[in-house]
Length: 200
Image (tube, rainbow, N blue to C red; front, top):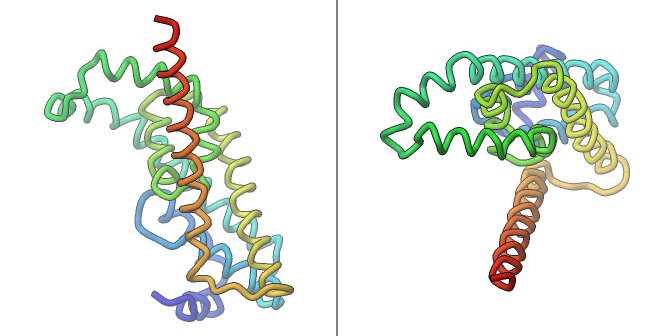
């Protein structure tokens, strides 16, 4: 669906479209969230939408999606892993190791997940499966959603005001974040391996 068509839907049906798009984008139904938020920012800049109401609808939609995905992971995730994990090599021991690693990085996984396509959809399910504390998850989800939404709203407003950017190019910003993260992870793993080798 083109950005022009999405804009027409927003104009016709209002803020509920923002809520629905963010909700389904989080729970895993494919949606160009970055481009969508960028477009909302541009519509705010042109006074087609109110910034406070748009922000509230977007944050509410994202948070609702995060909570539903978290609950699905919490109540169904581990039972599915126990039932089918053996077919893909997920033993109880491996799951326990993953749980320990996730708990150390849970806050950053949920927060940074908003900026990384794929992880954004996976992180709430994983948080639920790994039994991340509910209040902490909701707090980090609110902060992460507000930061992520505010960032792309801001880009849209700046673009409409000062520097025209095509909305189709906006998802590449998320891919750039992902690339930077992967490079950092590879560098960290390499340093650990090198230091471990030097100590033996």
